[in-house]
Image (cartoon, rainbow over the protein chains, first blue to last red):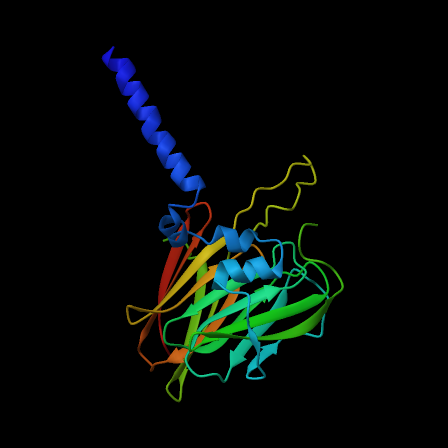
Length: 153
Length: 104
């Protein structure tokens, strides 16, 4: 009899946790981990919303994207982002037509508004750079033509 | 000692330290198929990179699968020669590595 009671108690407890997780009540835990929602997003809007909390950005000419006009190999596209905006908190890189557009987010804690890395691009599309400065988001984009895609293969 | 998966070069010039780092990692997207078996190769990629300057965090990066194989990363911060820079990465399978280097 006791065992049965324990069993019921346990199933109810785990059931409650599963419910809380699925309904998003355990969000703080998920935020600490890798931002799966944003990185799995299939379009630019939801990727931006997941990563930045907003999809509204202001076009800015103070963000400079250095990337090749034509990338022969989409698997390795060198991209450098720098900005003259003051107090940049984060730099986010997206590729518009990738299966999952969000590529990376760099949270700067005192580092200068400069990052350089190499990204994969599925096909010809815009590279979008978003800088967070003073609670606002500024974006810039540059088209990169890709002759051989870098996703799948 | 096993060879580290990270290579770091940090140079100071006019009070600005430029860090250039290469990490050796295959950065598997989870979309590729094994040509022999036809099975999808599971995703295996670096999720997070933390950078510390003299023990204090200066930058952390969240990465997705669209960062190229054997990732290259470069960034800048204000510092001086002789400071220490520490890079730590962690991938989606829980593996991690870190390396500390001195600014030249």
